[in-house]
Image (cartoon, rainbow, N blue to C red; front, side, top):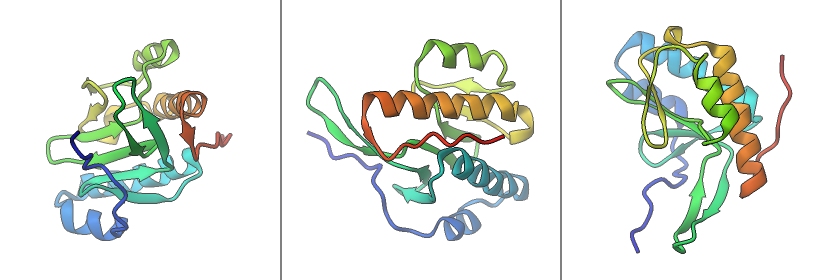
Length: 148
């Protein structure tokens, strides 16, 4: 069975952003995403793999027997777009996508060029819905933090 690459690394998050992100707007958006996801998840940012900033953690196990750990919420400031790992495939999440703004959807993530392209309130609701879903279906460090 293949070993997962997305594991907690202990690397410095601020150091990663300052060395990896060369666009000033993307750098500012990265620090804003950290602030938001940290507030909504009530978890400190940590590096998962070489380029993912994650918040909280949970253990998953698939019917196939594959299992591992992953961040509850996360993102990566990739060159083309941010990869947001905040989505759970629920009815509410699907409805919330209508209000998110300008994005592309991948299999397991949402691609956003810049934060000004999306509705931050819808992003918050997507994150909270994902935390609830993970909390109900997996062993996790999830805590729903009610914020205004």
